Length: 149
Image 1 (cartoon, one colour):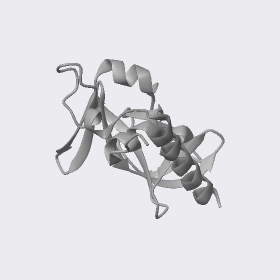
Image 2: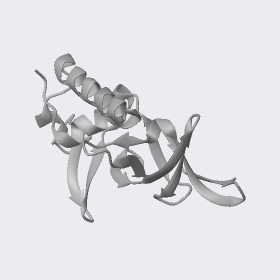
Image 3: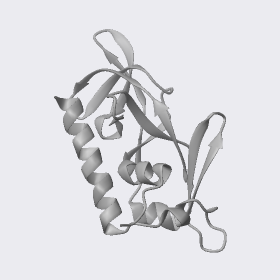
């Protein structure tokens, strides 16, 4: 049930972006910070990487947290802020990591369980990896080429 509500929320957010006219896809497919352009999506090391201009990141309200190690039940586990957990249309989980300033990459994660505001992972990127906690819906729209309506 929780998976379905997350998918519904993501769909509503994406449709809201399209209606609100967040940006034209042609703007987002341009090189950032060159000639006033705001974002670029490119295939790097087998994954799509989104690079934003600083003004675009501010406008989108991008915020990050970190993956941490926490001892839970006597075992060291990877923990991620629940706000960073995303679900695709088939229910698989992923997050946006930030390998460098203003760069964002979809990264697969496997969630063991959710408790409060955190998700305990079975697998995912290493502890210390920055993850997007606010602005993921806008990054999805950028990566998928959502256009204004």
